[in-house]
Image (cartoon, rainbow, N blue to C red; front, top):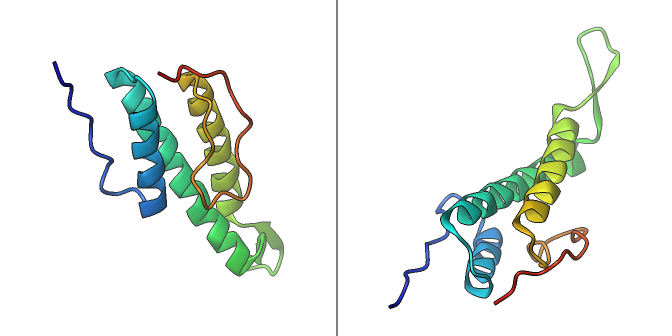
Length: 113
């Protein structure tokens, strides 16, 4: 019996979608794992989007009183980084982050086929 592999969500960035497909091909995932993998991929893309804005605009901005404030993207980057790491740990995968990673997550135990 052949099982159909799910398709990567269309809203993922191309490099993240390739990573998602690689994980689906390399691991035996139950449907709930695929959902966790999708959440991890979305967190990664959101993290990278926040990172690009921070790289472009900096960590802070001046509010209407000319006081320095932390950009909202800093919290988004932090939260999505933690979310990605936790989801990968929950999946119990030994994988690298998508290729455009600044820092790949540490290796984790594998449930590789």
